[in-house]
Image (tube, rainbow, N blue to C red; front, side, top):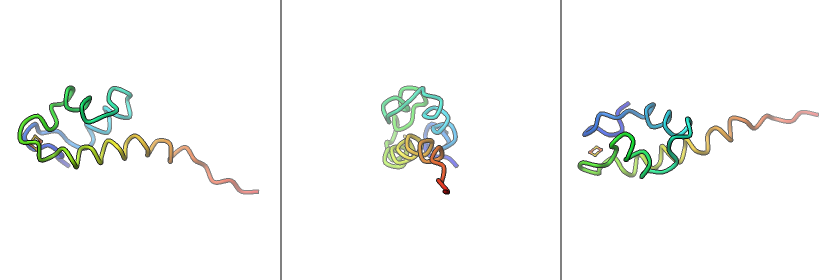
Length: 67
Ligand code: FES
């Protein structure tokens, strides 16, 4: 799904940038992919996605403990 229509950037591109360690903020993603650099309407959605990508890998590593 496109997050930034102006720059044709998808959520998977943003996720890859964050999960690959290349970006950890909207500023990083903007510099790398151009997200939010034209009309700016995608900024809030992109920020939420970055936040989710930063926290999801940690949550995925948590394994349930059964005694
Ligand atoms: S939708 Fe991202 S800059 Fe316009």
